[in-house]
Structure formats: C-alpha cells, structure tokens
Length: 279
Image 1 (tube, rainbow, N blue to C red):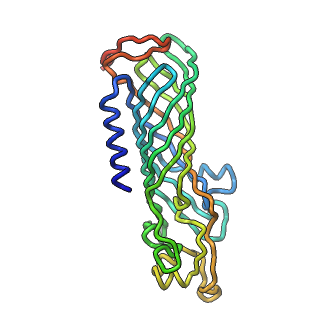
Image 2 (spheres, rainbow, N blue to C red; image 1 turned 180 degrees about the vertical axis):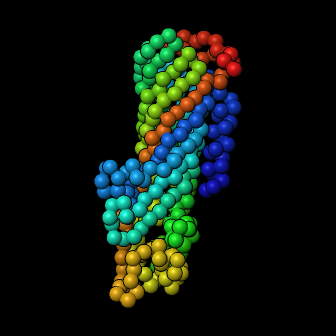
Image 3 (cartoon, rainbow, N blue to C red; image 1 turned 90 degrees about the horizontal axis):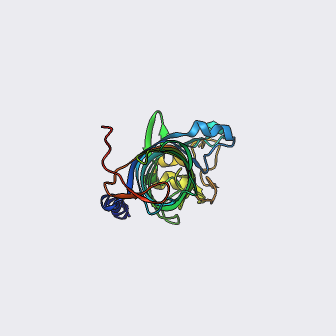
C-alpha cells in the first residue's frame, strides 16, 4: 500500500513536468477532524486546529476547468478534556495526503487592471497515510502497533491499515493578478475510508484481553480511566461509534504560473506568457 502511495506521488510530479499551461503553489493553514474525540461545542473546534501545509499544481484546460495535484502534510488533534468527557482519550495524528482534484471556476469578477476575483469549487480523491499517537507523561506513542482494541489477538480484527482512500470536496475564492500570481482562501471536507484516525473504533473489547495479549501500554490507551480495584477486567466495552472519520482543512493558497507556452486568458483567448520579468 505504501508503494501505491509512492507511485501516486511520483505520477503527480510527472504530471507537473509535462504540463504546459499550469501553476505551482503552496498552501498553509490548519486542520481539524470529526470523529469520536471531536468537540461537542462548535467553538471548541478552534482548540483542536493544528498546522497543515502542502504544495500543488494546477493545469488549466479552459478558463473554467482545471485539474489539480495536491500533496499535503497536516496534524489533527483531539482530547476528551476539551469536552469534559470522562473517558480520558487523547490523540494527535500525522496526515500525509496525495490527491487529484477537478476544479471549476464558474465566473470571474474584474477588480482592477489585470486583477480578478474568482470563486471556485473542487472535488476529487486520493491516498491518505496516517499515524495516530497518544500522549502519556509528555511522551507520544504510536497507537496503531499497540492494538488498543485487541487487534491481532484471537477473536479480534487484524490491525487496521494506516493507508486509506480519502474523498475530497470543497471550494474557495482566489485573486488572480496579471495572469501570473494567485492568492486565495479555500476549505475542503475530506471523507476518510477509516474509523481509526483517532485510533478509536467500535470493536467490543475487554481490558483483560488487551492487557494480557498486547501489554500494559496498549491497555492503558484502550481504557485510560480503568480502575483495577473497582472495575471488572473481563467486562466488555466499546470505545467509539461505527461511523468513519472526516477531516477538514482551511488554508491560504499562493501560486505562480510557470508555463512558457500558451495559456487561456480571462476572455477565453490564448495569449503568450513568458518567464516573469519581476525578478
């Protein structure tokens, strides 16, 4: 599966190399998620935002239609303490995403000489590799290998894959300057084909099975507030729900057209654009 993601990334750069009417750009912003540890109050989502950065290329077929290749790196975060839950779960997850998107710009508004405001939407999908981690005493541990829901033990599921599909939909608004530079703001909702971005799923599990089979560290993350003196270690509990997780990214975008050949201008005609002379 990791090989597939590598091939996807290399294909993206090949796409960049052969494109004639294109832009290269950067994104910087933040990411959050919706899952078992997401906040219960809308205002608390701001406490969970973590950095998101990336690069992208945009190839223009027409003034309205374009294709994009994105590579992004982000972190998502959740903690039961934010919503005053008593379970004691916390996590952070590193995300590595490579995607292909179709982009539609329905119209442009002229703001001044050579400056246009352009709303747009995008949809697509790609591959996502994620590394969930949990914190104990200011130290983070990778959760997937631990088997916090008994993964790998007799009678329990196999370990979940950390490489999965992500479907993306979103949009934004950009300002195009002299057909060379573009700055924008966009948001994108991402459906993840996994319920384990936070390492919390819906498998019925007993504390004793995890403790005896996968060790004390796995058990402590499986049921952080378990009390050996008061709780029944053979009792079965379910840590979360069955729905898959979502992520959301809100980012600023910065791009520059790098094509040396022809491209579509705002009126739909083709015009020549050489290398920028600003530098």
